[in-house]
Amino acid sequence: MIIIISIDLKNPKPIFEQVRDGLKNLIICGVLKTDEKIPSVRDMAQNLAINPNTIQKAYRELETEGYVYQVTGKGTFVASIVPGENYEKIEKLMKEVLELVRELIYLGVTKEEINAALDRL
Amino acid sequence: MIIIISIDLKNPKPIFEQVRDGLKNLIICGVLKTDEKIPSVRDMAQNLAINPNTIQKAYRELETEGYVYQVTGKGTFVASIVPGENYEKIEKLMKEVLELVRELIYLGVTKEEINAALDRL
DNA sequence: TTGGGTGTATTATGCGATGTAGTACACATG
DNA sequence: CATGTGTACTACATCGCATAATACACCCAA
Image 1 (tube, protein in one colour):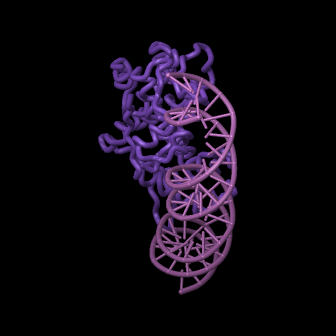
Image 2: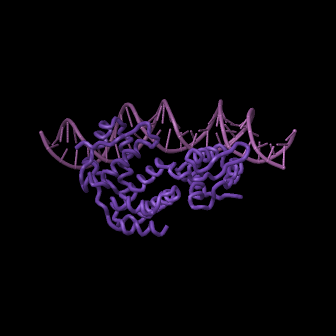
């Protein structure tokens, strides 16, 4: 299984963050499912033409955030969500959302337009 | 007028971004109003115990984003919003919001809870 | 048992962004 | 003219990012 993630070397966003967030999105959107194996550090590095250490850093952060788990000798797999285990993360994300929404409102966007966009998810 | 912004030197977020976002929030929340003068680069630098160049960088970005305007010899002032002039910025912000909301939903938060939080704004 | 694939760790190096420091210039205002 | 403003530039130190190379421990199938 080859996973394709778009990496933009001109993007000021660090590569390991692009890899991390790219995989996170695939997990969130359901493309990658619980306990599914994702490419090894070396395979992913070769496919993206990136240093293995950089991939390793991305994987490590995903593990710290609870999105994957790594097993020495076997590989890296998608983790399952543990309900009620993410209060801090949820609080942090909610805070970010509210800050962005405040800015949108300042720019003239109405709450109704924002709600409509959310419903379309 | 002295403006207080919390700066955390241990925060990995660059100082100039903390200053930029701190001022942006004050503008968005209405604490600072259109055409109001904000402290000079040197004053702000002295108040926060930060190098003037760093403050200058924050002010410059705020000007680029359209939140303030700078007049040589006079000072820096809060800009007025130009309706219909911010489509790109709105699109970008909306995209970020949707991505965060998708992650919240993945973590088990319901749309209803998110909508409720937005209404409280 | 052995070899290849896995995660993990370490050291070294180059590069760019960040932040500081100092200096200088042009403009506005009293 | 003196002061305060934004602006510009150079120089320097530090840190994070990314690469490169190497090594070790583990799992599993041949």
